[in-house]
Image 1 (cartoon, helix red, strand yellow):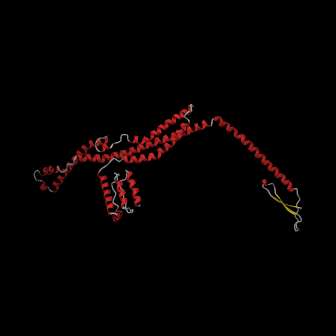
Image 2: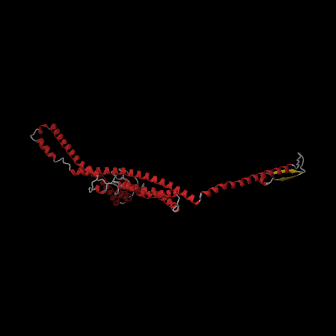
Image 3: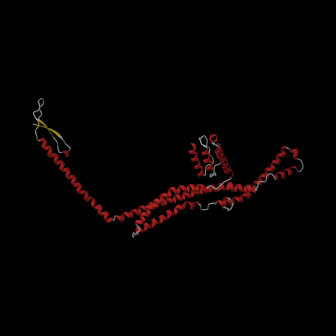
Length: 367
């Protein structure tokens, strides 16, 4: 895919929040392409597995060892970072979704609003009750259309977890529950490890019964091993909050974004449909305002009167053509003509044509 494909991959990594594994190699990528991918991984916190492209890397090392080594080192560091920590990813997906909505649906709304506003300006001085009601409806719909531009962000940010919650500066309901669970999880871990230690000592007694018969050896082993099986409380808490908690909140944010997008799209579709209907209604009012109903009826009545003379003229022309045809047929058939077989003609041949508008022509032989 070359360096152009590497740039496209880099752009995809910058905005994607669901990819976990990327396998790529044998793409004829230069050191610059590797650096583009490394720069994109800096903004991606979801990629976990991305094996080094050995063949591309070996070719790039021949061309520019320093740039290639720097790019590969950055890629490894960012992948290690993604394995060690979790970060909230909902803002990344939200910005992508907001950009899509802004560049498509809102442009359609803006175009219809311009047309509706033009109709409203033309009907501003109308005092008819029906027109006034439709104008008021159109104005209210335009207010909804303007407010719809902030519909998606307002829906999405309801109850959103802030970055302070991630850093522990503010505690949300999920973090609070996980913190309360940390103590219980630590207690269960201690009980499990204690049971495991006793099972190990019992197994040792079964395998080496003679040595284990020594007085107080069992108690000494258990007491000495207790210090080896301590799990720090901070590990449990950090694991729940920084990994499980963030993964849970990311999943909630993903569902929340999907829900907010669905509601926003449906409401905006309703606004578009209502605005379109209002535009057609206002356009009808403008037509009636410029061409009143009385004038329209008079125009409709005049149409048959104009068609009647044309029809009569057509029938008259057809009758004249038929009359000319009959006259010509009588004229030419009454003239004598003779052609004797086996004799030289003693008469002259003359061609006579019917009137050209009849479309006929004949050749007559006369004495």
